[in-house]
Image 1 (tube, rainbow, N blue to C red):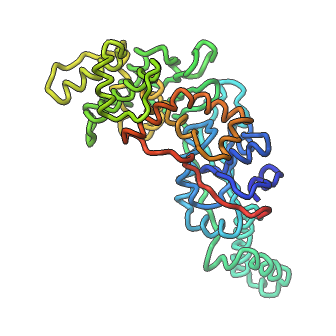
Image 2 (cartoon, rainbow, N blue to C red; image 1 turned 135 degrees about the vertical axis):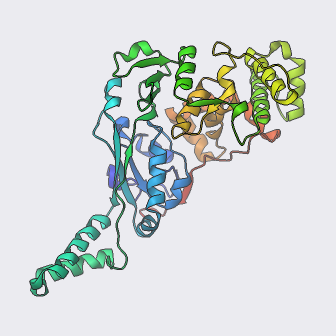
Length: 411
């Protein structure tokens, strides 16, 4: 009975896809509400039908931390959740003290996120009550003569099982949320827990108003962002990172830029191989942007011992040469670097992944604004996707990496 426990609606679909939170695009279509588990975009609700959801992505994410919180909760309680979801769905919520984000300043009130969870029939709460009854029965001398207490324990045990041998208890978990990305207000990167804290806006910083943080940048402030990353030790040059093939990564970025330029020029990329990409680079070298030539000079240094290129934050290739350092906020930093490096394929991967070939997806695109946005974005990258697949640079995406579960009607 997917979503009935949280939305008072029962799906009529016999098959649908779900993400890590239990959100389903197909059910969103059915309800005409793609925020049915995320009203106001602050305290996200989720439905666990299976612990396999831990491997799925999070769609319609409003906060970058949500997926990792859900994943960690499932992993920490996997044994209990496996047992609970065998009989019932587990409905949960990511709870903080803010219930509406009506202005950017409200984001700074979100400091901690807690998880509250139980099955749709209240098994966890009832098991806790039964455990308390058992403790009382064992502790009080006259409990043997309390017929009401004994009858109540028997009634609860029929629904929860033997909680003394198989306790039904989910660990209460609380997470700090100091540094995060949010989709609110056009996209903001909030880094509060830094030696040099800042907010970085995907749009114009002018519309944000006064914020309780020292620095506020937008993506046009390249020099300031570069200094912010350096001062907080958040990023490192790819060529200095340990345990990776830096030259291979640079070559791949260069290939992405070649394909992007070729696609923009209307060149047919059907069946293109890596060798073809190299040939395109030689043939159209004068048309390739500065990002390509900056990376080429870095590659010469890495592979051939050439002169160290001076690529400062003013250079278009600067953020292409970086990756996040190894720290807890690396996902948000890599996301920021990806946004500042728009000619690499990393930025179009979500659009490519949404290009499902299934009839269900094609029907959804026709009537769903969310999928139309994905579809319009993916049109630009269709030839690129085929080129990358043909050259072995990207696996085939036959469908979104969601957990698929067949459900009997009314189950």
